[in-house]
Length: 350
Image (cartoon, rainbow, N blue to C red):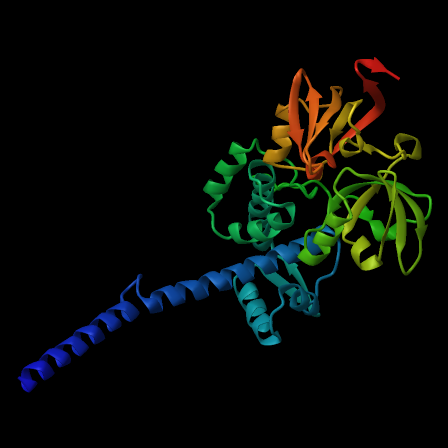
């Protein structure tokens, strides 16, 4: 009996060992194959991120040295050396005196990745309810997962947009991009009037802080004070101050002072019960499905809107527009601009 049990245990152990070996060494589906595939994927992601950064330097007219790549990619010097050798062996990058530039093949590859990233950001902004602070991180993952054919289908699905939600131009399928324009906000001087045309979404921590400040492409600003320590400006009638490290991540273009309305834009959230106003528009910082919902409900320029009822907690508030009462929460009404506020009680305007 003991010999019988011993034989069963031995056979079971042997069978488990065979299964384990199959699990580890099975071609294409085994553990080693998956680890090898994962390693190759990570190497490709690193390579593509390096190409994106090199193109960004080139597009902005900046010199890129190994130190810049090291800081941007966040890898060890050993890994960077290996990556640079691979990029040069693939003839994607050339170098001279520790300065790295893209070859034609490298530039074409970089533009494909950039196109994927910016199309995904546009899709996430317009078609999903994902928070704007998460668009970049999600797109950073998705850009490495699709073929050129798939991304062209995505572009067609969302109408072949020209810009991503941060104001960056989206490369065409043939790799064309408009010439870089604008200057960093940190380079403006007192009295300058400008319009934000782009907000850099990396590093994510800086972008999140800029978003908290309420900055977005299309916002007009007037510089009140500028020195080596900070820049103070008026935007939407409110005063804001940024340190140079943050201000340099915002790209602006100078506009004529007479074309800028420096008055404070009133928000729908400021409308008290019994008051009415005219809708001016929705903040460009408010994108996606929620923006489309508001527009579908009649929140479009020129429409008259009035606050008629408030919930017990004060949020949401009921507004009357186009003959219908709709409930809008404070975080949404803060993003809707109005003008010509009037009080209207029992149908009589004061």
